[in-house]
Length: 251
Ligand code: PGA
Image 1 (tube, rainbow, N blue to C red):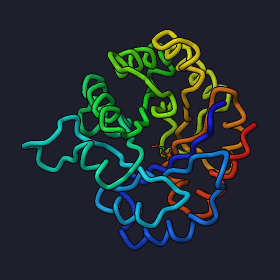
Image 2: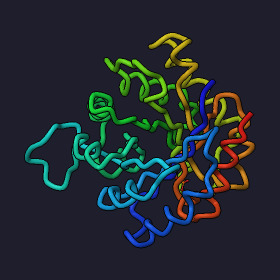
Image 3: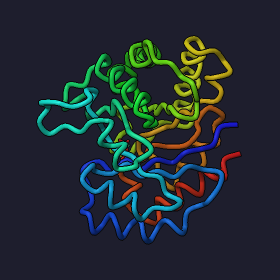
Image 4: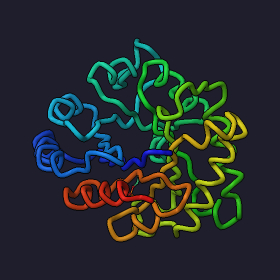
């Protein structure tokens, strides 16, 4: 079945020295089977981490959808690939909110990542007003349909979806395991409409939003939650190790 994944999203945190220490301290303590453990770090330190990580896999947090050219400050998929990272987060709600990332751009980025043999971790999720208005499924459907338009999936292991309700990100208030399961299950049903049940059943869907050692077991015990995309709690070595272990033990 699906191999759980625990991906840390460091966002704009950690210096090169802090990050290298983290990887050197944590790598040998991670489970070596039953889970993919990933850290998505700032681009400027990716190469330093890739060199030192053995069990841990490394990913970027964003990429530009163009191959090269006059896009000051941007990084291409090829450049990420050249640092030997495996994964890239695409469409995080912070990028949607602060950098005008549209569903169309996210769609182009997913296609470019797959074409470059990077594994995209595609983020979707509703905000608080949308949840309160009962629009969660409608928003998820819109985001999934637009993100995956024209995307071919040859290997379902290579593309991951993260359900991240915006109201739960960085707030300390996680979705309940039932809310998270309902959304992840709904996302799987949308993927099944696009790609068929066999592919959808093999795709990993993560939950993100205030996941931490104290709630990870309950969340990943749900049938459609295949792990987590974790911000704050991934910055601490002990808590990152605990999160990875909990995912490895998912039944
Ligand atoms: P959080 O962030 O775990 O700090 O809530 C999750 C994310 O933004 O991916």
